[in-house]
Image (cartoon, rainbow, N blue to C red; front, side, top):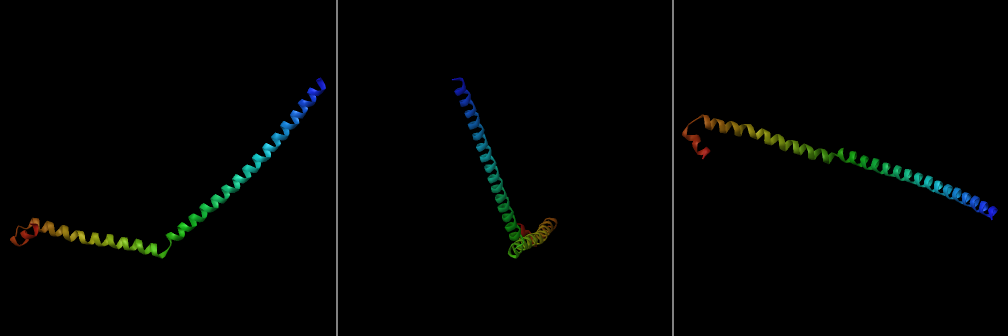
Amino acid sequence: GDALEKEMASLDQRQTEAAQMRLHAAKQAGLAQRAQAHGQRQRREQNQKGDQTQKDQHPSRGREFQVDEDALDGSTAEEPPAIRRSTSSFSSSSASEAPDLQ
């Protein structure tokens, strides 16, 4: 039975090697697939970034920002006179400006 055991052992060895080879091949294929998927994902992200920059450069977006700035400029332009008015009414004790305070 010694020869048979040796035969079985060598058969096991061959099967294990074959299994390892298959596993290795599968792993390689899996890695290649994953790398490909990763490449596609990167390309997709790149495309999205491209869309984003196009949106940023869109003329309507620019107009929105300008409107915002105008609104800010308007509010800051209005503030100083109001402050000046209040300080002048405080500093002067004339009766004509008293109703403004009340």
